[in-house]
Length: 250
Image (cartoon, rainbow, N blue to C red):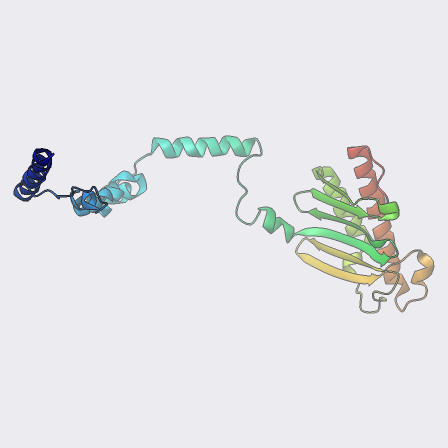
């Protein structure tokens, strides 16, 4: 037993001397010291060489290289990218031009809202048409706990031209809502139109019939609004009914 212990001690002594001679760590218990990290070579030089220099970056990019050599160079990858974008635009899948995206189109639209809050909750009829012909329709009757109806579709250029004609013939752009009755317990209606560089935004009390227009300070102006709204409601509801094969509730 004594000889075995002596051999173990002698082996440990030899390992310790070997570690000192060769610069290794002596760790007979196997404790975690982190020496494996200290033994790794320095990476500073490799880290510096990882990122290319400014000249190397200029040589990689064709436009910058063209400016350096003073001649127009062609990048095959860039030409292929432009060709792919042209093909996508031809199919109507390309990215929109600046100022013609979804957010920009929301600023150029025709919007109409009519609704009130009654015993069935917030009941309203609303539609929006932007300059690209995208129609957003929403109808919330709340009758017998019916769910809100939401539909979206795209109108043809011919139909958009007809809508502009209806607006122009109604002469609604010449009216003013200063003398119109404001929102009351019966509800309210809003009309916003932005067309040909002109814009209007009207708000008035809900009009159930022409009789309601006679009791106001501007009956002629409200008649123009009433007839235009009725024309729009009939047109939009007919489009929704034909397109989705449903009967929207007004």
